[in-house]
Length: 164
Image 1 (cartoon, helix red, strand yellow):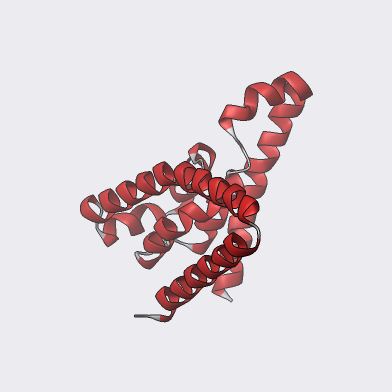
Image 2 (cartoon, rainbow, N blue to C red):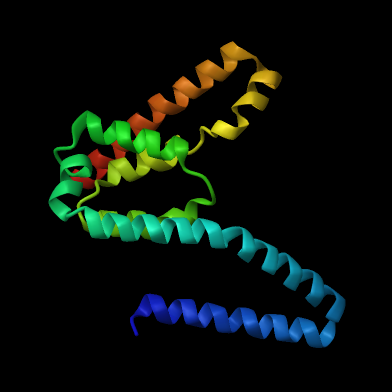
């Protein structure tokens, strides 16, 4: 068992102990906390399943050389474009993407492209209609262009930082 697995197991044990203590001393709050936890888990299961499927497909169909071609050191503008599109289209909590991106990083994904991906997640396609209704077309276009520009800049800064 490596240290990451042990830390995860230790956290699980601590949470179970806290829930057990809460159940003993304040059963009504235990029920509330448990139901909220179950709702969060149910919400996350489809996201985790999607990420596991995508990771499995990537591992099965893409070889490290193919990944390096699109996301490695020589990926250039194509890598930036894919990272932006991936970030904009991605949904769910950020931490749900850590495993897949970590796996891709082991196959050569550049740190700057990871930063670009996470920065571009600030653009939420389902929320654009509401943003348009509240802030108007001009503001929505400008803010999203700024997000894209700064996602690229952030990625370049991270790449420079890691080259030093």
